[in-house]
Image 1 (cartoon, rainbow, N blue to C red):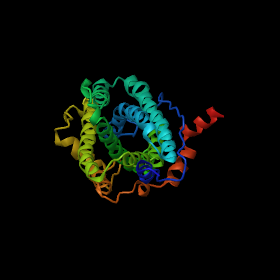
Image 2 (cartoon, helix red, strand yellow):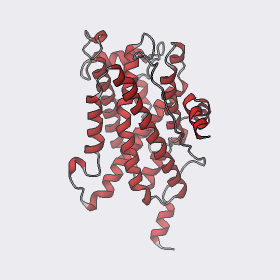
Image 3 (cartoon, one colour):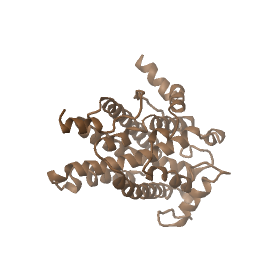
Image 4 (tube, rainbow, N blue to C red):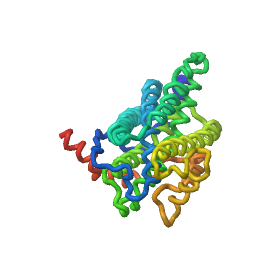
Length: 314
């Protein structure tokens, strides 16, 4: 056996023994109000911003994973990655439909937020960042850096997926069932494929030290983009005129914290969310322990959108 063959066999592969199931879904936004959580405009806008943040990033995930797919030597991991790509493409399409058929249709200007995300993922983090050619000797490292970004983001989306999956507060407040289903369906699939990004990053050579420093930066950037985008769409609502929402004004952050307290729990508390990232920073991090596949699949089996997808496929 050659040394190269031996090393390839030692690479970490898939850490799961189940098959990830892509689901083709469709949502109907005709009846969903802007305040999809009744009498909770802040939380409604705050979660609506996720629709702006996700599509460009998820399409970028798919492009990068398709690029590195031939480098995967573990057959099960390759299957995981292919299923991940299909799920992420569906997520991007679902949130794009919410942008076009829900937010834009209700005269909320989201183009500025979409432009920021498109710049980030189609220019700054592109194969040729800002149209500069990456030297051949650094191409693998550039791909690995970007795979590390995805691994960090996927840990965050898994954490948010857990929060959404087990959230009962929205139902109790009479929130729109279509929006709840979008968030819980997406969250459940994030739990289902929670191992893939981390497994792929390690399989292609990603190490702990780089992951640690990269994740600290990515977590801060993601939270900043979320608050900035939410503030921008809130600013268009006269109800927030006296607050002048902005990333740089304390009110948005304090209101987020207030709505995430234990006696409220309409949003994930920002302190809790940051604390959930600590485990990812540890050398012994294991994504399998983040969430329950059984609970996720149980929701996916009864999700209205997923059920419609099965009927349409039959």
